[in-house]
Length: 237
Image (spheres, rainbow, N blue to C red):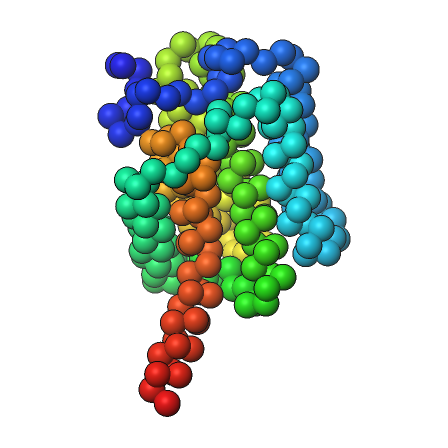
């Protein structure tokens, strides 16, 4: 189809934006409310335990999404195919390389910068929290993308343009949710623009699990590296 990018699977489209399936005004309002409620504790620094915060970010988007999907999980979640494994690996490595490069540029320009990968403690509870929270983050990005697409597509009837503008908006807002981790230019370039790899994985497969696994592996890179170093240390001994 001419309105699909070459990298996309043309047999599957994003849901809702073009009324396939059609959502009522109330259902659209519910998705917008869910996105708003996702952002409130982040931007207003509402104090929550790590466990509650992680599950909140996940369920506040997941439950409304399941409701408007009328239980049709296949609209967003599909079986991960063998060829998807390569895509997941690529979309884990490339953002790491990109982040390190951008970090080097920012440091060269004397712009205060921190590690693009937030450090995590390696307790079982912290791992569970991250697994849950990252699903919420991924759903937030995708629902935001679809909401923006529905508005732009309504006026333009141009799918490609809708995806491009909506992706830019989604990356910018997602970057801003990391405002505590560095100056504005850093979060927009690293956490914001860097999320293009997750969006690419989703747009190519229309499968949240693919983009989620790439996001999860990327954020677990410090833990994986620490584990490898530990194992190598054990072997040396």
